[in-house]
Image 1 (cartoon, helix red, strand yellow):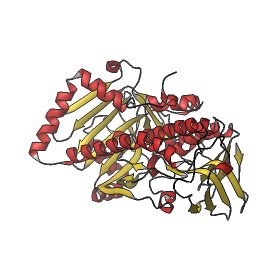
Image 2 (cartoon, helix red, strand yellow; image 1 turned 90 degrees about the vertical axis):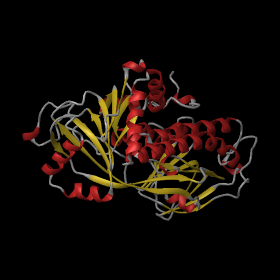
Image 3 (cartoon, one colour; image 1 turned 135 degrees about the vertical axis):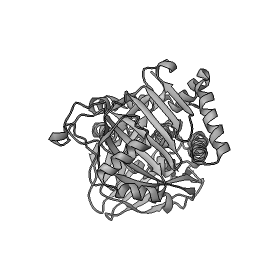
Image 4 (cartoon, helix red, strand yellow; image 1 turned 120 degrees about the vertical axis):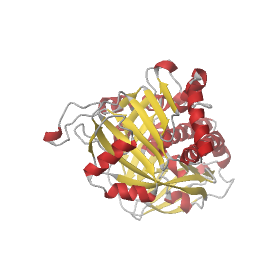
Amino acid sequence: MKDSRAAGAERDTDVAIVGAGIVGATLALLLGQAGLRVMLIEGRESPASWQADSAPEPRVSALTPVSQQLLTGLGVWSTVAASRLMPYTGMQVWDAEGNGEIRFSAEDNGVARLGHIVENRVTLAALEQAIDRCPAITRCYGVRVNDLVLPISGSASVVSAYSLEDAKAVSLTLSDGGSVSAALVVAADGARSGLRDLAGIATREHDTGQVALVTTVRTALPHQAIARQRFLPTGPLAFLPLAVNDEWAQPSEAAPAAQRYCSIVWSTTPEEASRLQALSDRAFYSELQTAFEDTLGTVEWAAERFSFPLYQRHAEEYVLPGLALVGDAAHAIHPLAGQGVNLGLMDAAVLAEELLAGHRRGVALGDERWLKRYSRRRRSDNALMLKMMDGFRLLFGSRQPGVRLIRNLGLGWVDNRSELKRILMRQAMGERGELPDSCKPR
């Protein structure tokens, strides 16, 4: 791995990835480890790091076994596992306005675990360590993209032997005055993707009417490795189990509490989120405990609270000549099922698989026709997941008596259908559709 920071420098590469988050870094490794020259362009000044005695990060992901397999193949998962993660073996979902409930367990599905709750910073730091060991990847941090010039549609064609000169290159102008020439540029720069906007790609989006409040809490009772979610009239409240110690806590609070910490995601109305943010710590603990029906006993402590509005977005196009969108730049989803990062990792795995297959056949990396193979494989799955999450949000947000009755009866009906539950759980574990080879068990 090299760092490229010379202001005003002109650089060239095979693939330039804008955005070095979890999805962008994963894609860089998939391509770099296969021998392509990759440049990672990122606005933050330095790579991510993680310390064992650090407080839990409020942003976490529920990584599926399929995502775990992908990271294992890249040599990343062992670093994650040696840091901090919580395997969860059960899920519980229930309705606040009725007795409808559904439970899933790893044992019923014949697996050791359903997934892992991992702090985003832990995953990203592990990816950065693997990037350090990959000489094909160059990092260009502390800069942003100011301008983008794409080739004309259809100009990047099939060639007998690929080289950068065989395809019309994409040109990026950076904030440090430098430039980058690449056969392909990938937008991995998040839901508010500046690169997507520069390319003129429109999105279909809507405000969900909800704000997510996130923090870390400690409860009186252990979470027992179960991910729990209660659907309130204003939105879902999730308690995601963590495995942490108290090394970072105040001495008076220190206690052996490895299974008494949870990351919470409380999706609610903007007005309610503002009210919750303004509460004193003790008042917030009480509100949270009541909203979760004392399921884990007293809420004893909570970290700083953060909130952000929830939008669902879907890009009208995933690819243009010389450009591809992945992760939140292509689709932003409600966090109620914890699928956002997993969908993005699948984007990275499929795009890498298609790019490398085309490269072996002599196809230019930026060939729009070949890039559409990636778009066809990913867009429909992402669109279905977006519709499902929006449907769940609307279904459980309805106060109509008839709807409440149907959803409670439906939860109970599904809970009593073991085969259907196994199918649903396998889907939630990422086992759906045509998996790329990098995500299949070895």
